[in-house]
Image (cartoon, rainbow, N blue to C red; front, side, top):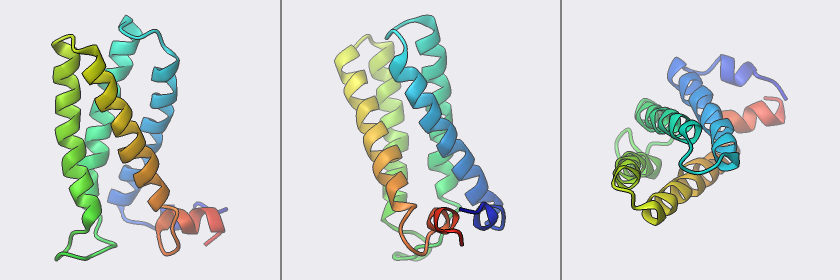
Length: 132
């Protein structure tokens, strides 16, 4: 394992990676908290902002170009931003089940599944884990 591929990557990739890692750690914390507690709300708002930064920063990453400078992962970023808004609206309108479903779906799709793709050969995180 070496951080050289990440430290040599563009600033956008470094920002994207740092905020994605922060989102993963914050997700673990949120899932351990009492739902609806003040700390859950503070961490939740922080998570929404961090996930928004992760999604927006992805538009500056163009390693996989399938449609001009974009790839299908950019569609996931658009969906993530839309889902973040829907999740917040659901929470603010006390639709707890909808909020829970949206946020769990985002955690699975935008963090776990999309995150797993960063470890495929040829990607920066694969180089970090495999030692370059």
